[in-house]
Image (cartoon, rainbow, N blue to C red; front, side):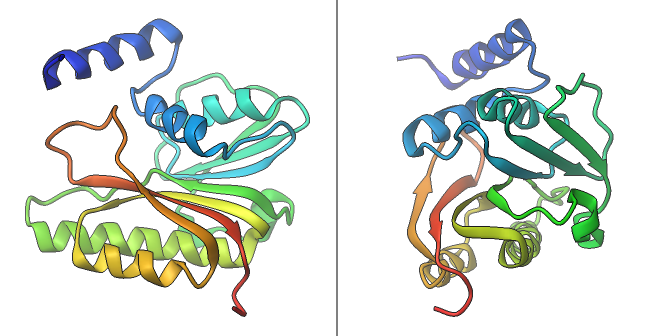
Length: 198
């Protein structure tokens, strides 16, 4: 069995070879292969998209009939296909006009805070980012749409997962193989949005 350093090196080299700016693309690929989140023709919102690996992968998967909007405070340095658009903006400032009043089949968030090393502060900041993303979900996710997000391990994160079961038919934790061993992050896959009235 490969040790963690060999595995990290493998994903890093694989990303460079395949033209992705970061190894994080293989986390999304793994989740998509297992849960089948992306389909041709989908409309997708990618929150915290820099440096752009997820944006590239999504654009490839949804094809020319789909459209993906990526949002981040940081700029990106990748070429975008015709079915992808980048918005350099704080997600708190997003409006419907930013994506032409579209509602989405899938909203993804790989956002993470600038960590301080203080666990309680870092996990709280991670949760706040996810809560902001969920507000966008409630406004712009289509019925039966999906939501995928990253969050840091904490009791509050698990409480939030339980709460999400009021809004989605399926809520599953996923620990990605491409995540670093020391990382406290995990992903949550939420499928089949029921809306906010349930």
